[in-house]
Length: 168
Image 1 (tube, rainbow, N blue to C red):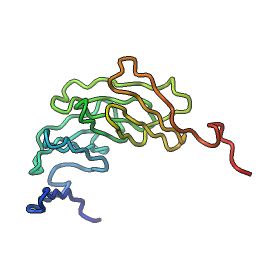
Image 2: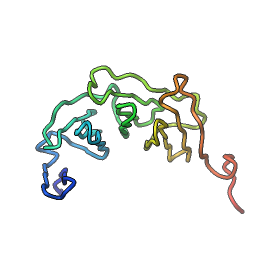
Image 3: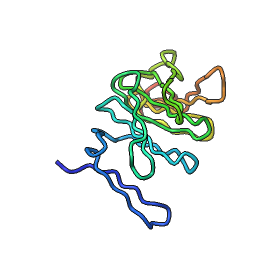
């Protein structure tokens, strides 16, 4: 099987750092988030080990945190809130972890009130608004992270007018 590596290239292309996942004890690295210039850390979601690994920019492991649930799906870092958001397979739950101190994660939201929303396949943000994508249900939802009530807005649903109708 091919060797899986993490390769980090600095802004000026002066230095290239590479390490294999095996050397870092990471078994899966499909979801990687960068903490930005202020944090200078990478967060890697290892779905096999149910863990989040924080690495410095020399690719040394700084800390490891087990996810509160098994089967993590995807992860996203928001610079405004300084939090990592982690979703789980077959679950509408999103956990939030403080980027600097992940010791006390909390539930950002549990979304059973969202009709047809089964699991979160991907996340992204624009400012303080976090967008969730459920590809199986063809739905995009968003929530403003600065809003205390965490009211969700639906932006897309399957088919015409969200009814699943198709063109004949």
